[in-house]
Amino acid sequence: MPSEKTSSYDHLFNSIKEPVICQKCFDEFAQGQTDAGSLQHYAALDVGFTDRGVQIWCRRHDLNVCHIDFAGMALDADFRCLEQSK
Ligand SMILES: [Zn+2]
Image 1 (tube, rainbow, N blue to C red):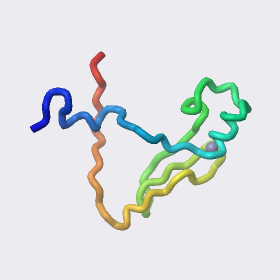
Image 2 (tube, rainbow, N blue to C red):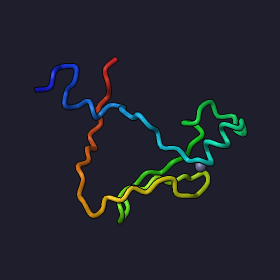
Image 3 (tube, rainbow, N blue to C red):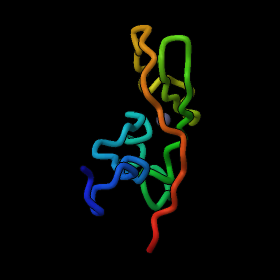
């Protein structure tokens, strides 16, 4: 049974452990070629469903960053939005 600290809604808050980045955006940011304050602000990624699964696309460089293949499976997805109380 979930405790108050580990509710069934925990996955709706930011739990990213390994961000997906465009290698070209990373290289340009790391070489100081931008005046963006962070790589997150420099990156311009689109994320969306495709016939194959989910694709992450760099708008800045107009190229594929990652395309996840669902292998025809219908995976669970939770689109609810929660704001974390402060
Ligand atoms: Zn890029």
